Length: 245
View 1: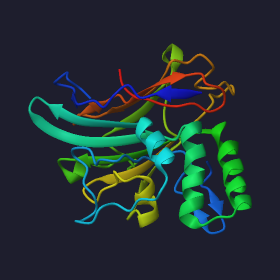
View 2: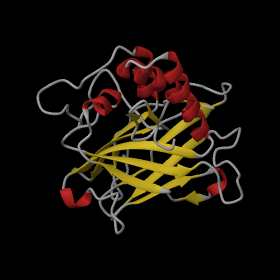
View 3: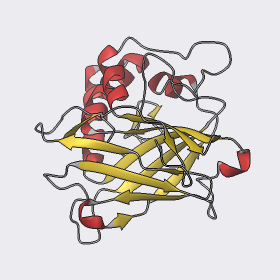
């Protein structure tokens, strides 16, 4: 199952309406999570590189192109009041495939190690839906997604109207240069989170069965509201992506 990006959005919050696997371990390679990596050639408005230096990059144009297609960017307003910026990536099967090649290049892995990395990734595709979020809020206290009493509610909206909550939301403290190379939108002005959902419901049924047209998330608080979504299409086991209306 692949998906197509439908465009970058700028949206307003609740009072305005223009609103916007297992960790991979291999030869010392520990991935924060193998379903969420994002990059693009230009840093979008609201996200800056760390300090004055440009973010580190690797020679992996196919990876960065797929990363761009799987990332949703949004500016959240209430009236004219800017509340938050966010960038969120879904690590789709297509992205995971390109990511394995990028990591192998970055780490100098052998073909055998790369194959093991891919096998680990494929094993988790049936278990989890993983996302990486970079969030800036106008007030630091609002940026608390990983807190037990967070002001935010994060949901996955399944076909048919069912709503699912994450298995976990984990803050990434001090992202290193390798992670930033994989997700150039990561910024010291924003906070990075790993968000993981189960890929199946309590009966073992896939949350995104064949024929699903969109993958939808929802982030809700009194501060702002966002509904990132990705339009899906069937293209065999691995496809391409796009986000938007």
